[in-house]
Length: 341
Image (cartoon, rainbow, N blue to C red; front, side, top):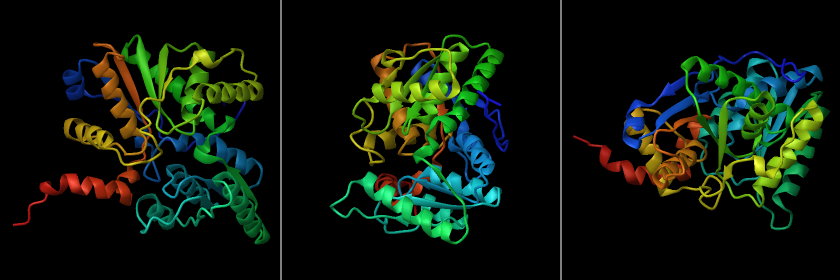
């Protein structure tokens, strides 16, 4: 139980912290990965930590179906489908996104696990939020008319309850760092829908953990610090947290969002290749690839100092490698590795 909330226990935790020797020697920092990509089903990823709490809450409300939202290639949607399959629930995903032209990557995995995906095209009249809300309402009504009780999970599983998964992760990580006898550790997390980062931030602040948290945003946001402060206020109210946090307490860089969400970027692909060729660890082009590209630049600029202890949270998202718009760009760059004899 964390902050008075029960959860399901399906995660193979603690996930390991891996020292990357080759990269550390080359970059002059002590570089580690917290391997949440190695969580244990649905091809893994960080959302499983959130879903331990969210699906427990759903089951406590006698839900029979999980409904969530995201992009067409949502990692969170795929893992929602995975947990639903494990617990005998139905699942569905609503995405305000055009059909990508093929059933691949997460869309393929969604189908394998029996999860329908409702793709909604821009109608030129309504906002994406309006289209999403209307479709969620329609899909909920359709399934409840068939006798299901639908439990709605927001994008990325990122609400107050979902963030508890990363409150737990921060405690787990702090214990591992102590066992490894590491000091002055900088923990770097991707910032997308914010639940992962905020769970970590809440725990570090309220538990007094010896970690310095840096977030790297992977999509443009108008006022990310105001968003973080508002998210914390909601968590503080719901869970009666003792500590105050305001905008100045958060360390989030927006320098590496590359102007859009999930867009193909050469520097990100180069970071993915570098990690793969030095450490045989695969990153994805939407989240961890952008984050690692940002880390490489921060080391180059001295924002991350020589000799620092750095742990990057690997949040998974590996199926993103196989999405068409990223795969096509990588195929162009990697075609010379194929030799037909």
